[in-house]
Image (cartoon, rainbow, N blue to C red; front, side):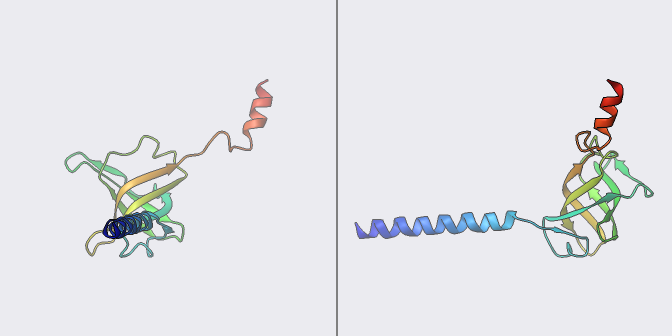
Length: 132
């Protein structure tokens, strides 16, 4: 009976350790492009640089664009999916990914857009009153 208890305790310890290890790897902080060097799954916050070309390549099925992070660094982003519908309206973009190889191109596995909301617009209430 003592062996069963020891095996049960060991199994609980191993399971708990695996849960904490995976949870720790899934937590990511927001960094700029310089801080994302060498990181996997880095979250970089920035804005789309609309002065540069944004292009979807149908052959490789990749969307590429330029982004400026919060510290002013500009990088080319490769996103292996089509351009999101609300891309042009986004006030902020979060790209999640990493640098691959020795390039200055950031490969985004996922992308989140923060779009303006009519509920956060301070003039929305005034416009509503004027139309009444």
